[in-house]
Amino acid sequence: MKKNNYSYIGIAFIILLFGILFVPKIIDRIQNGDVVRDESRSDFASEKKGKSSDLAFIEVDGAPKKVPSFSFTDQNGKTITNEDYVGKVYVVEFFFTTCPTICPRMSKNLVQVQNTFKDFENFGVASFTINPAYDTVEVLKEYAAQYGISNPNWHLMTGDRDEIYELSNEGFNLYSAEEESAAGGFEHSGNFALIDKNGFIRSRKDEYGNPIIYYRGIASEEEKIDEDGAPQEISALKEDIKKLLDE
Image (cartoon, rainbow, N blue to C red):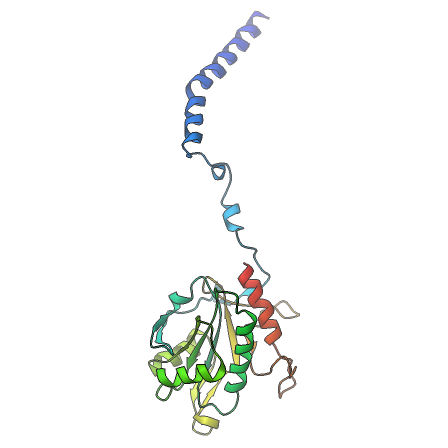
């Protein structure tokens, strides 16, 4: 019993010594703001600041595909780069102002999307002309006025032809090409790419769990289907923009 008593006394002495030496330091750190709740947990809370959505990341060689660096001039004569879109959810398209076929329909659909998110300062559109020789700053500005483009984050961009085609075909894999036999002299994809706030290409998944990658941009919500009988995807695009805005 005496041996046990000595053990208890020893333990009590250690606890007392700990209190004398360390408790005042802990109190002092708390008062000075040096101790915060995060010291006792991982970064999980900071990772959950936004509500993650169910949209897929488009992967290339096993890594999420990010928007490549670019620098072009918009309809206001301002230099716009990919950095101007950081922190924003935006839609990407390739077009040209003299397009006699799908571009007017795509533009009208994007204006409708613009109007749906008119109250969101972190939503935008990136439109790249594939006919930069004709689509000057002045031409793009007139086109923007014609279609009612009012979102300050909607930049219609022109610049070096080769850089634009590289961005289209390699950066986004959205087909663009000069083609004399095509209406208007150019061919291009009628699809839109959706980009999240961190610059990653995102999309919803199909019924088999695979990302659809791009959104068909030609048929309107009112038309419901396109010439090939495929359902319109503007409604899906709007839904998924909202999801990324909420992330």
